[in-house]
Image (cartoon, rainbow, N blue to C red; front, top):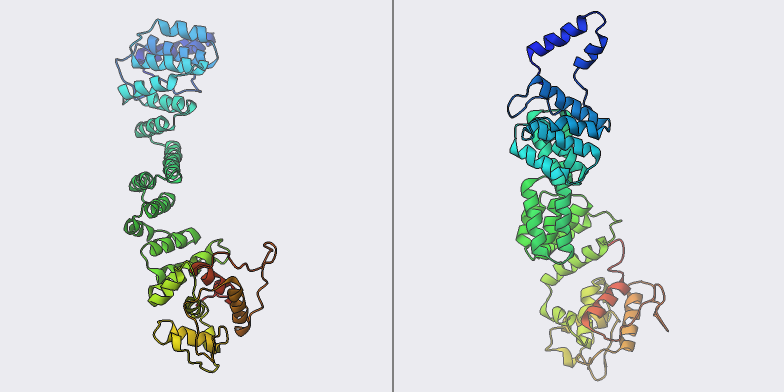
Length: 415
């Protein structure tokens, strides 16, 4: 409220009570200030202004609100220029006139006179118009300290949320540029400030994984919800820690509509199996040239349903007795998927597998398992056809076996 002396109020009352003194009554009424904060509202700072000076401040700001810049400047020019109330009124007049660069001056005035509530309220307005959200938040917090209200708390909540979102955006940009360490530090700092910010937590987990910090990712990921994104991140962390069974279980809980569900689930299941895979299977998977013994190992490994169909006679091959893949060779020959020279008792385990042999073997595999004959791609790739790769390596063959046997398709019903 403006500092008007008791004598001034009595004088105004006397004028209003006098007969025919309507004009005087209007003159004595304090000017209304609506667009900007009233510089004269308590709490005030600085030396007490006289009633005349206080009224002049109000008249000047009111004139500026009406667009009468000349009158506002004239009124303020006769007041103490270093007084904080007068300085605020001058800034408000310039603000109302549309001048730029008011935000910094308003914030400096408020900081200089911290207890001046109106200065903080005006600093918020000026910073907001200048597009300076950090200064807007500082001013809003200070204004709420002196004039607590639901309006200020709502403004502060919105500004704080926007500030968090900006920080999160900067951290995400760091991760997108390949700065995983920088993104992780930024996201972690944001989490320290706002532990419940799920977006920051998810970004921190992704950045930790990218920075090869699986244990730190694990310490963050547990608090995430079990929604699609949360389950995916938990599964990724389990993968990074080589906890394949846990990863597969998490990926299996993803919605069937999740675009990467099958790929992640099958990959985790495959890795879980490979942990206990015999060395000869791993050798076959990583081989650049697949031999017949490697193909036998991959067939049994990638199409476990073949074991149940292996009910044919046992052929004794003399050249497989001392090799690790002998049991797999017996399985594929009993299952009529591969064959050897029964007369010479030779399987030729170390002979490289060519494209025609691979195609014929996969065709027999499909028939034994009751699957449709693969439609082979001829003269260019067609939708739904199966291509025999030019480079017949272990990974490519394993993927073809899984595709032909139906072990890798939707809806991820593998083992």
